[in-house]
View (cartoon, rainbow, N blue to C red):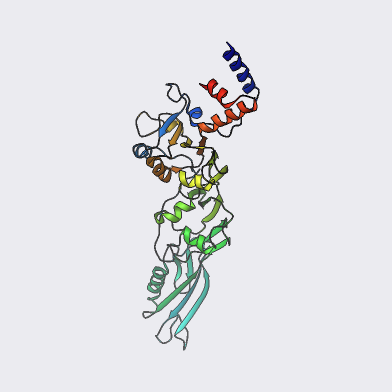
Length: 368
């Protein structure tokens, strides 16, 4: 009877005190996970489960617009409307209609290609040049002139007009208009010529605006996969937008941080960025990754999660868990949570027992 009274008094004393808490324990978070109507799925990360999860859709990191795809183009300049052409014409015959008396060469400069894509040349008339390479335009002009000058030779040069210029709009060191030297001049070429991506941008996304359409790709994907780089066309606009994407690292951790996703980040890298697990608090068996999948990803087979809310659990005291932490990639929107060790709660309760006047032995008897 006396023990019961003491226990009730002690419980009342504990209830009246605030028990120091940091984060919560793994058991508290996963409570009810075995229930059929649980709102979330728990996946212990092992080599086998890692292979399964790799089949699941990737979360986070979505962009509103897709990318146009890679296209390197040809390494030749293509004449467009608005370009400025200059011609050098050689004719060795005497009394040439093209070069004049006593001359072997004639120059025709600053001929603007019309909106219809043609230029007007004396004795020849309108010549359609838009869409032709410099070499093709030269050959066509020379062929037309051969009727009046059989031995004629023609040299053609071009300066880019507004339709052969791409613009770096924003997010680069030196925004401006850049001429397209050939058909292989690409998005990455433009970014490089514009001084590169601004250092202030956390998570750069490349946006290409062409003909009223917008295309997007993460800058990291574009630079790492050359097959995504695409040739520019006259009138294209390129801008670098900052689309911050982060992973939250919290709980029994060195410091709570938002880790930016600029490149693939693993659980171990995220935890390390946050200062590592708190030695005095963290449960090394209770490192968790909380992730939300779209409802469309939920499946009954192993090619998707069985629920849209998934908690990935890692045991850092095992080799499997350490390798999983080193390999498992976190995505934007994930939460990496380091749970408290159960020993921390026991010690906190004992501190409260001592503050209430109970001895360790009494508290231990009560717990037993």
